[in-house]
Image 1: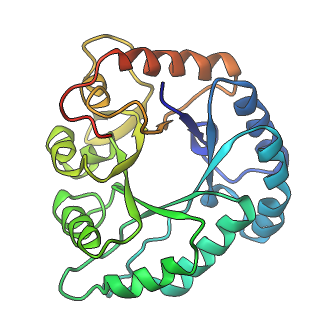
Image 2: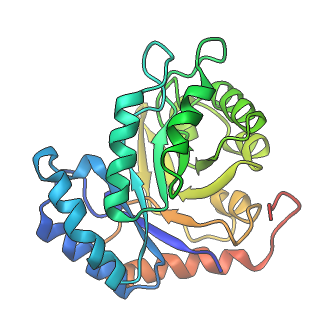
Length: 261
Protein backbone atom coordinates (compact mmCIF):
# COMPACT_ATOMS: atom_id res chain seq x y z
CA UNK A 1 0.00 0.00 0.00
CA UNK A 2 1.07 3.56 -0.62
CA UNK A 3 2.79 5.78 1.88
CA UNK A 4 0.34 8.58 2.69
CA UNK A 5 1.42 12.11 3.64
CA UNK A 6 -0.68 14.83 5.24
CA UNK A 7 0.20 18.39 4.17
CA UNK A 8 -0.20 21.03 6.87
CA UNK A 9 -2.50 23.06 4.64
CA UNK A 10 -5.04 20.26 4.96
CA UNK A 11 -5.42 21.44 8.56
CA UNK A 12 -4.63 25.17 8.39
CA UNK A 13 -5.16 28.04 5.96
CA UNK A 14 -3.23 30.75 7.81
CA UNK A 15 -0.05 31.20 9.85
CA UNK A 16 0.17 28.80 12.75
CA UNK A 17 1.78 28.72 16.16
CA UNK A 18 4.21 26.12 17.48
CA UNK A 19 1.33 24.72 19.53
CA UNK A 20 -0.73 24.23 16.34
CA UNK A 21 2.17 22.51 14.65
CA UNK A 22 2.81 20.16 17.55
CA UNK A 23 -0.89 19.26 17.63
CA UNK A 24 -0.82 18.46 13.92
CA UNK A 25 2.29 16.30 14.26
CA UNK A 26 0.70 14.43 17.17
CA UNK A 27 -2.50 13.71 15.23
CA UNK A 28 -0.71 12.65 12.05
CA UNK A 29 1.74 10.53 14.05
CA UNK A 30 -1.09 8.59 15.68
CA UNK A 31 -2.91 8.02 12.39
CA UNK A 32 -2.18 5.56 9.59
CA UNK A 33 -0.21 8.24 7.73
CA UNK A 34 3.43 7.65 6.87
CA UNK A 35 4.55 11.25 6.77
CA UNK A 36 3.79 14.93 6.92
CA UNK A 37 4.34 17.81 4.52
CA UNK A 38 5.68 20.85 6.34
CA UNK A 39 4.51 24.01 4.57
CA UNK A 40 6.94 26.91 4.87
CA UNK A 41 4.27 29.52 4.12
CA UNK A 42 2.32 28.54 7.25
CA UNK A 43 5.19 29.33 9.63
CA UNK A 44 5.92 32.93 10.60
CA UNK A 45 9.21 34.09 9.09
CA UNK A 46 10.61 35.19 12.44
CA UNK A 47 9.80 31.78 13.94
CA UNK A 48 10.96 29.68 11.02
CA UNK A 49 14.44 28.49 12.00
CA UNK A 50 13.66 27.84 15.68
CA UNK A 51 10.55 25.92 14.68
CA UNK A 52 12.37 23.79 12.11
CA UNK A 53 15.17 23.01 14.54
CA UNK A 54 12.82 22.13 17.39
CA UNK A 55 10.39 19.88 15.54
CA UNK A 56 12.94 17.58 13.89
CA UNK A 57 13.36 15.33 16.95
CA UNK A 58 9.58 15.37 17.44
CA UNK A 59 9.02 14.20 13.87
CA UNK A 60 11.63 11.50 14.37
CA UNK A 61 9.99 10.31 17.58
CA UNK A 62 6.60 10.23 15.83
CA UNK A 63 8.22 8.09 13.09
CA UNK A 64 7.07 10.47 10.34
CA UNK A 65 8.87 11.01 7.05
CA UNK A 66 8.96 14.63 5.94
CA UNK A 67 8.44 16.61 2.76
CA UNK A 68 9.40 20.27 3.04
CA UNK A 69 7.27 22.48 0.79
CA UNK A 70 7.83 26.15 -0.03
CA UNK A 71 6.06 28.50 -2.47
CA UNK A 72 9.42 29.61 -3.86
CA UNK A 73 9.84 29.04 -7.62
CA UNK A 74 12.89 27.31 -9.03
CA UNK A 75 13.13 29.91 -11.81
CA UNK A 76 12.67 33.65 -11.30
CA UNK A 77 10.83 36.12 -13.53
CA UNK A 78 13.86 36.41 -15.81
CA UNK A 79 14.05 32.67 -16.37
CA UNK A 80 17.24 32.31 -14.36
CA UNK A 81 17.70 29.99 -11.42
CA UNK A 82 16.44 31.42 -8.13
CA UNK A 83 19.83 30.71 -6.59
CA UNK A 84 19.82 32.36 -3.16
CA UNK A 85 16.25 31.33 -2.41
CA UNK A 86 17.01 27.73 -3.41
CA UNK A 87 20.03 27.60 -1.12
CA UNK A 88 17.91 28.98 1.71
CA UNK A 89 15.13 26.43 1.31
CA UNK A 90 17.49 23.49 0.85
CA UNK A 91 19.45 24.48 3.94
CA UNK A 92 16.22 24.80 5.91
CA UNK A 93 15.23 21.30 4.84
CA UNK A 94 18.38 19.96 6.51
CA UNK A 95 17.06 21.11 9.89
CA UNK A 96 14.09 18.77 9.34
CA UNK A 97 16.19 15.95 7.91
CA UNK A 98 13.67 16.10 5.07
CA UNK A 99 14.44 13.81 2.15
CA UNK A 100 12.38 15.83 -0.32
CA UNK A 101 11.84 19.52 -1.02
CA UNK A 102 8.77 20.47 -3.05
CA UNK A 103 8.82 23.70 -5.08
CA UNK A 104 6.87 25.23 -7.99
CA UNK A 105 8.50 25.57 -11.40
CA UNK A 106 8.37 29.33 -11.88
CA UNK A 107 9.34 30.96 -15.18
CA UNK A 108 11.28 28.20 -16.93
CA UNK A 109 12.39 29.09 -20.45
CA UNK A 110 14.16 26.33 -22.37
CA UNK A 111 16.12 28.96 -24.34
CA UNK A 112 17.36 30.91 -21.32
CA UNK A 113 17.10 28.76 -18.20
CA UNK A 114 20.40 27.12 -17.28
CA UNK A 115 19.72 23.61 -15.99
CA UNK A 116 23.40 23.00 -15.37
CA UNK A 117 23.40 25.93 -12.92
CA UNK A 118 20.49 24.28 -11.12
CA UNK A 119 22.36 20.98 -11.10
CA UNK A 120 25.38 22.58 -9.43
CA UNK A 121 23.18 23.86 -6.62
CA UNK A 122 21.52 20.49 -6.09
CA UNK A 123 24.89 18.70 -5.91
CA UNK A 124 25.65 20.66 -2.75
CA UNK A 125 22.69 18.96 -1.04
CA UNK A 126 23.14 15.24 -1.73
CA UNK A 127 20.77 14.15 1.03
CA UNK A 128 17.69 15.84 -0.40
CA UNK A 129 15.82 15.44 -3.69
CA UNK A 130 13.93 18.20 -5.49
CA UNK A 131 10.29 17.67 -6.38
CA UNK A 132 8.80 20.19 -8.81
CA UNK A 133 5.03 20.55 -8.66
CA UNK A 134 2.45 21.67 -11.17
CA UNK A 135 0.94 24.61 -9.30
CA UNK A 136 -2.02 26.88 -10.09
CA UNK A 137 -0.11 29.58 -11.99
CA UNK A 138 0.20 30.19 -15.74
CA UNK A 139 3.97 29.69 -15.68
CA UNK A 140 3.96 26.57 -13.51
CA UNK A 141 0.56 25.01 -14.11
CA UNK A 142 0.57 24.50 -17.88
CA UNK A 143 1.67 21.27 -19.52
CA UNK A 144 4.11 22.70 -22.07
CA UNK A 145 6.69 24.44 -19.83
CA UNK A 146 6.63 21.60 -17.31
CA UNK A 147 7.10 18.98 -20.03
CA UNK A 148 10.03 20.94 -21.49
CA UNK A 149 11.61 21.27 -18.05
CA UNK A 150 11.36 17.59 -17.10
CA UNK A 151 12.49 16.37 -20.52
CA UNK A 152 15.61 18.54 -20.47
CA UNK A 153 16.37 17.86 -16.80
CA UNK A 154 16.12 14.13 -17.52
CA UNK A 155 18.55 14.41 -20.45
CA UNK A 156 21.09 15.99 -18.11
CA UNK A 157 20.47 13.32 -15.47
CA UNK A 158 19.44 15.80 -12.79
CA UNK A 159 18.07 14.46 -9.51
CA UNK A 160 14.62 16.00 -9.99
CA UNK A 161 11.23 14.32 -9.93
CA UNK A 162 7.66 15.55 -10.13
CA UNK A 163 4.92 16.21 -7.65
CA UNK A 164 1.80 15.58 -9.72
CA UNK A 165 -1.13 17.50 -8.28
CA UNK A 166 -4.26 15.98 -9.77
CA UNK A 167 -6.45 19.01 -9.01
CA UNK A 168 -4.21 21.93 -9.92
CA UNK A 169 -4.54 21.32 -13.66
CA UNK A 170 -8.11 22.63 -13.50
CA UNK A 171 -6.91 26.12 -12.54
CA UNK A 172 -5.17 26.47 -15.92
CA UNK A 173 -7.81 24.58 -17.93
CA UNK A 174 -5.45 21.68 -18.55
CA UNK A 175 -6.65 18.09 -18.81
CA UNK A 176 -5.40 15.99 -15.90
CA UNK A 177 -5.58 12.75 -17.91
CA UNK A 178 -3.56 14.20 -20.77
CA UNK A 179 -1.03 15.54 -18.27
CA UNK A 180 -0.74 12.14 -16.65
CA UNK A 181 0.09 10.49 -19.96
CA UNK A 182 2.94 12.96 -20.43
CA UNK A 183 4.34 13.12 -16.92
CA UNK A 184 3.92 9.64 -15.47
CA UNK A 185 7.61 8.70 -16.03
CA UNK A 186 8.66 11.61 -13.81
CA UNK A 187 6.12 11.30 -10.99
CA UNK A 188 7.44 10.56 -7.51
CA UNK A 189 4.83 12.21 -5.28
CA UNK A 190 1.11 12.39 -5.98
CA UNK A 191 -1.17 15.09 -4.52
CA UNK A 192 -4.77 13.94 -4.30
CA UNK A 193 -7.60 16.45 -4.21
CA UNK A 194 -10.90 17.19 -5.94
CA UNK A 195 -11.49 20.60 -7.52
CA UNK A 196 -14.91 22.02 -8.38
CA UNK A 197 -15.80 25.19 -10.26
CA UNK A 198 -18.54 27.51 -9.03
CA UNK A 199 -19.25 30.98 -10.44
CA UNK A 200 -15.91 30.96 -12.29
CA UNK A 201 -14.04 30.22 -9.07
CA UNK A 202 -12.24 27.00 -8.21
CA UNK A 203 -12.56 25.26 -4.85
CA UNK A 204 -10.70 22.28 -3.42
CA UNK A 205 -12.93 19.74 -1.71
CA UNK A 206 -12.40 16.27 -0.22
CA UNK A 207 -12.07 13.27 -2.48
CA UNK A 208 -15.47 11.89 -3.50
CA UNK A 209 -15.68 8.25 -2.35
CA UNK A 210 -17.79 6.99 -5.27
CA UNK A 211 -16.27 4.21 -7.36
CA UNK A 212 -16.86 6.30 -10.49
CA UNK A 213 -15.00 9.37 -9.15
CA UNK A 214 -12.51 10.84 -11.63
CA UNK A 215 -9.52 10.75 -9.26
CA UNK A 216 -9.61 6.95 -9.09
CA UNK A 217 -8.76 6.51 -12.75
CA UNK A 218 -5.44 8.34 -12.52
CA UNK A 219 -4.64 6.99 -9.06
CA UNK A 220 -5.01 3.44 -10.36
CA UNK A 221 -2.50 4.24 -13.10
CA UNK A 222 0.28 5.01 -10.64
CA UNK A 223 2.20 2.35 -8.79
CA UNK A 224 1.29 1.85 -5.15
CA UNK A 225 4.96 2.53 -4.39
CA UNK A 226 4.45 6.22 -5.23
CA UNK A 227 3.69 8.25 -2.07
CA UNK A 228 0.33 10.04 -1.97
CA UNK A 229 -0.69 13.22 -0.15
CA UNK A 230 -4.21 14.13 0.96
CA UNK A 231 -4.30 17.83 0.07
CA UNK A 232 -7.80 18.92 0.97
CA UNK A 233 -9.50 20.16 4.10
CA UNK A 234 -9.42 17.56 6.85
CA UNK A 235 -10.81 17.69 10.34
CA UNK A 236 -7.96 17.66 12.80
CA UNK A 237 -8.75 14.11 13.89
CA UNK A 238 -7.09 10.74 13.49
CA UNK A 239 -10.43 9.22 12.45
CA UNK A 240 -10.88 11.66 9.57
CA UNK A 241 -7.36 11.05 8.29
CA UNK A 242 -7.72 7.28 8.54
CA UNK A 243 -11.06 7.37 6.70
CA UNK A 244 -9.50 8.93 3.62
CA UNK A 245 -6.34 6.83 3.85
CA UNK A 246 -8.54 3.72 3.73
CA UNK A 247 -10.42 5.11 0.71
CA UNK A 248 -7.18 5.79 -1.16
CA UNK A 249 -5.52 2.52 -0.30
CA UNK A 250 -8.61 0.50 -1.20
CA UNK A 251 -8.34 2.05 -4.68
CA UNK A 252 -5.03 0.29 -5.28
CA UNK A 253 -6.45 -3.16 -5.87
CA UNK A 254 -5.58 -2.90 -9.54
CA UNK A 255 -3.05 -0.90 -11.54
CA UNK A 256 -3.17 -0.40 -15.27
CA UNK A 257 -0.43 -0.32 -17.87
CA UNK A 258 0.52 3.26 -17.00
CA UNK A 259 1.89 2.26 -13.58
CA UNK A 260 5.59 2.96 -13.07
CA UNK A 261 8.00 0.73 -11.20
